[in-house]
Image 1 (cartoon, rainbow over the protein chains, first blue to last red):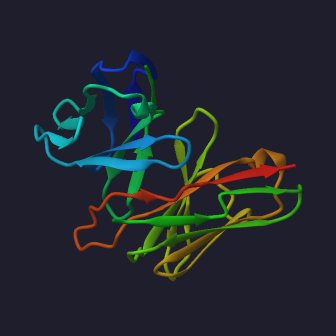
Image 2 (image 1 turned 30 degrees about the vertical axis):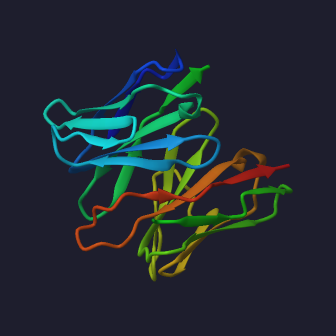
Length: 112
Length: 118
């Protein structure tokens, strides 16, 4: 059974701090690793990673994948209160059926 | 961008009634759409995969007669919760991905439907 584990489950920081969120995965026929941000409603797409060692960056957020260690991290620098959310990691298994297995998420709280 | 619209955003219904939730891909075609369920402080659990023009594929433990899925066009999938009970109260989220030749586009989610069964 596919499994995605995120750590920590929750994190409280102050504005301006840098945070690193972790995601390990065991996914059959692995195709890609995706990161989403979920505030009050549905998740919004952040990154999709398919290759090891290539950092993807969007503003203060960046992410990288290690396919050998089955691991990904999401970094947020200079955090702002608007970064407060649940960050979800999902493993995409390929094959005939497209399937995403989600981790439980990391609840990030950024205090002013 | 890829926009997925879900309606209604919240619904309250009485036990025993049925509720229909719509999911539309607004600016792209989606042969496949996905229905997730999320309990408070839990992750998203895939319920079923909706396939345009054919039967949905349900995950283990999901009752197909209770959660009816119809995917009649390349931009619309519906989930009907039949004979709803209080334990069906949850946050239901649909998602879709743009049809691409390589099949590697990310999922985009609707805003979810908060269902409360009284």
